[in-house]
Amino acid sequence: MSRVDLALLRDVFEAAGEPPYRAGQVWEWAARGAASYAAMTNVPAALRARLAAEVPFSTLDVEREERARDGTAKTLFRTRDGHPVEAVLMRYRDGRRSLCLSSQSGCPLTCTFCATGQMAFGRNLSASEILDQALHFRRIEAVDHAVFMGMGEPMLNLDAVVDAARLLADVGITNRRATVSTVGWLPGLRRFVDEVTEPIRLALSLHAPTDELRSELMPVNVRYPLADVLAECTRYFELRRRKVFVEYVMLGGVNDRVDQARALAALLDPKVFKVNLIPYNPTGMYAGSTRKAIAAFKDVLDAARLPATVRLTRGRDIAAACGQLAADPRPRARTHASA
Image (cartoon, rainbow, N blue to C red; front, top):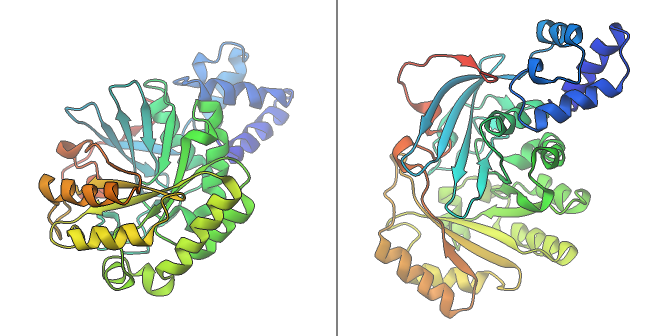
């Protein structure tokens, strides 16, 4: 239920002679994890029946779900016009329940290591479609973190992403626990830095310490090179006093050498950036780095006092990397997201 849905709800309520506050009641129930209109007991029964008939409870249909041994759950949705959308719920031992949300169906930026980048681009998702990914998992259990690191480039769909992030607070995910990632799409990144006043976190999908290698891995770098992107990240830090997360996927023999770690340490200001080293969930083109290579790489960053962690690998046994489930050709059965 995004603002678009609330507008539709208000139209229905107005036609039924109901007061405008009913829309807020419905959203409060949805944000708390209600599974259907029938659960909304402070809404008149006749109105609930009318809503069920006239206002779809979700903008997405569940096509397939997978659960990993580590508790990670991944869902492949379809939009009403048939576009695939993926989202992931990651469960951690410390109690965190973090969502990885998509902002587009497919992605037009064709990063070579990303399964989504190899798909045909569909379209931007609406704020409703982004929120409905989160509400699907909220109906399963409480959630408290979200990252916009699923399918798509969030800065190409910034308005819908920020609208969704603002409403995630009602779902249990405060702005300080929401992170928007970018591969460095500079027009959207500049707008994010200039216009978004909420304390939403910023992450940069970097993956290489030089323009030459980054342009090979991520064609967007040809258009918006490292120096310009890092300057915007630094400006974000100066305005918000919040560090920028750097996502660095470890590709065996490609970007994981010790000399490349030294180059990365020289590139990034430890006051501004924190690095997340990500063991690669292979999509076919590259191999993941060995544990020894990842450890040696991190040792260099530690010696340079550049904050760095190795991210836990989640959902490897269910193809949890973005785009992998949508690309799987196995037969699918479609169900409603509210089921």
